[in-house]
Image (tube, rainbow, N blue to C red; front, top):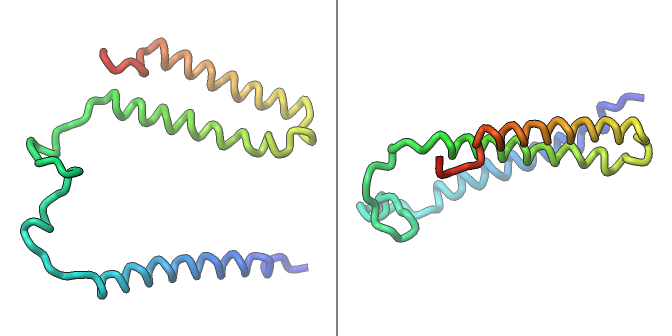
Length: 121
């Protein structure tokens, strides 16, 4: 039995989604207002007047915390397959998820000891 026909609804869904996005962009481009004044072209910072240079660099701590957040946040995604199939996986699955959590705890302790979560340093 050919299973490639099972993917046709998914392809249709992707095509419709892409057509919707492209169509919305094109329609709003042609129907949207075109009056470009100095006030409209000025950057808006939540109602606050701009001051200083927007190109000043951020502290490395900001990027470090952002990367650590992504790392530990993505970890949660790997718990869903285990949560759905934990009865079928048995003790082997429990051991695997335990090792997974253990490795992340080691990484968390390492990052904590290196001062990655301390903003004031």
